Image (tube, rainbow, N blue to C red):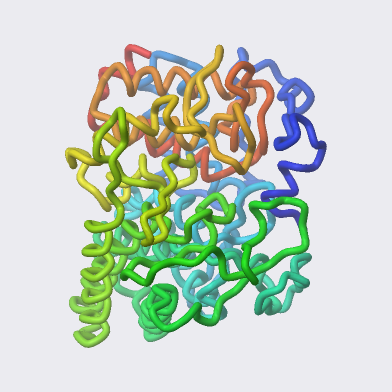
Length: 476
């Protein structure tokens, strides 16, 4: 079984990234714009609503390459990564990331989220998403500190020797705040769109109780808590220092996250974007608890924790930058130390309006956006092919399509959105898909030829632009 890190280090090219040439992978000439989707009989799942959306979108796009990319990318999660079944009539959906056969709580949520607007008119799609929610609940009940799981609850991971409380059925046990936020976001937006309350079982409620408990433990007001993690590895970002508990923090009400959404270790454990996301998620959980499950007590616990974290963010998340003024730090420790950067994996600072964690017109966010999209962000790369945010995970000079897509999704500027779409078209390098990352000077050098989250999010962005600024798509 492979992990994200394995796909980056396999050949050792450029020291930190496996750069895969599209010429060696795809035989067809991209200029033919032949569909890269599996034959209908080989697709894992088919939605009539999704197929209708693809047909309609392709017909409306003058740029044939853009239409081809949308056709390939938007259904990629359904075509290749979902495994739906029913257990005693209860939907259960296992979702892999693409080229890694494991289910991340974050990725699985993000991969199916773009289909939610279509679910209201497709019962089959509703069943699929309900199955994802049910499977996520099962995983959280197994271990709220784990980030990735197997379909087989008894499968033993290759990371079984990690110095943490590993159990069968867990692929990896990296504690990331967003792992417990994304499932709430998925369930909440599914409910708001469809009105369906079937996913909100007693087990779902128990997963929220565990979420509140885990977040509270990781505020570390009474010691380090039950979680620690160490790995025998040469990759510094795969391990946690000081006995697996990370560098010390001052208990100010923020929540510690030992890893970022990239699965890389944090430097300062108070990861600011994830704390903002936690506030939003707790409020969403409280609304469901009050409205659907009539559990005022647990809802109040969610609200109280959200308020405490929000107040701590007001005090500790904002720092002064010499060029941009007041900005949000990426990480802090409560003692006054902070890390100024951004990482293309979301939740990141750039994505906060998309996650309904901060208003796009927030003055500090606007200044932060300028910073993270400039050379003042050490992981913003600008080259001959494109410009965009990357991160330590894939190494220097590697731009992530996720970051370019998120830039478009959080922008209202016509020129910026158009430029993002053009860069994404160019970055496919003739493959017909988005990738994890590509070299700033040469898109044919990329990591992960099958990365469903990047594909589906690209499709979501095109749908969003079609709904809000359709003229832009006709001018690309």
